[in-house]
Length: 503
Image 1 (tube, one colour):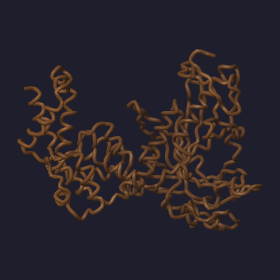
Image 2 (cartoon, rainbow, N blue to C red):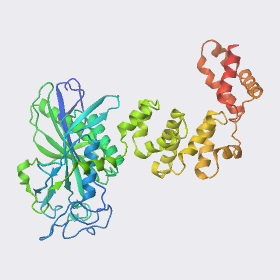
Image 3 (cartoon, rainbow, N blue to C red):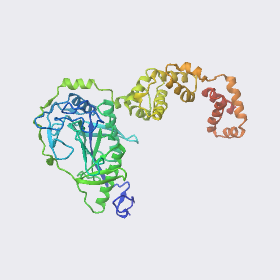
Image 4 (cartoon, rainbow, N blue to C red):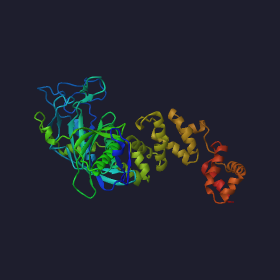
């Protein structure tokens, strides 16, 4: 076995013949991603057929979406606006004169025998996607283009024992395809790239980003080359990845496969491969098609799409504040850590809830903790999203205010007050504190008496503390809190115990 490798058992590959390269420094991967984003329009890209997900098979079709002779496609204004939004969010140049082409190929799920797409005049050019890796590394991945096209139908191989069935409901649904430069080098970078795309489409409200349902789909073009060279290796395209984690898994496997193939004297074949999520492996599907195989030619039935500066500016004004701008404000204006800000901006509704919350409290850190921990924990238990959370931000601000005043402890607020307010938000936080008897006792004599009792019951621990084991302070405070049934004010308790121990 080569140094720096280990054997793995993979279906269809003899264990002794495959070694998974670990931290191989001889080669680097060159990865480009193609991401199809299904747009959340009411109707299809070039017809008035419903584009709603989940209809009974073949109930959302017409002569136009099926491409019957004599039918004419027409532009969908909402789809164009959504595509422009994505282009602006990714810093692209927006093309004003746009034409469409026919991409010709024969497959059962393509009823017209061609797909209407943009070939030589993509709507959005250049641009970039900023990514942030887990170790804090930041990188910009360049974009080649974002173009508009229509989706195909859906072949279903598991509905009948002998035949493949086709549902044409999806045929004609508007898509944008985001094509990256081959600037991605690892599965982790690809993971961050797709994560950022999904987050942006959700912020913009143009797609739900659900890979499991196919509304966001990713194909990865992967090759490897000797490190330090600039010539590209033979490209392999991997499809059928239905989650972001599977994109990373498929890329990591394919890098390993190609690297081992080259090291063993083999040749990488340009092909399209699928991904087996259960096995974590890729498998050959067909040889890679060339661009001329599709016989592109101008779409004769659809007039050019012409945009004006005024129309582009109008779309820009409809766009919400994007994650990067929110992240900058949360860290710079509110003083949050990069981690806290990252958690908050990961979801649009969470970020907006936090924004509303800090309008009612200046304790920005406490507000972030409530949103990210207590509220998020409750929502996870209830299988709900932040958009479904009914307790108004000002109610949470009231809780924070009572904690800051020392009226009640944080633990009592989380464990008792918060659940009560969720169940009955009409009752104020102050009223609930009284009803539940949560008011903290700040009386010095009360705390002194409990502190003396705790310290007297733990002489050995007191001696350890005074011999330098100062971490025991939390133990003493916790015991006082237990005796007081949560009524002793923690900061006052901490001060009293520290004073007694240091005396």
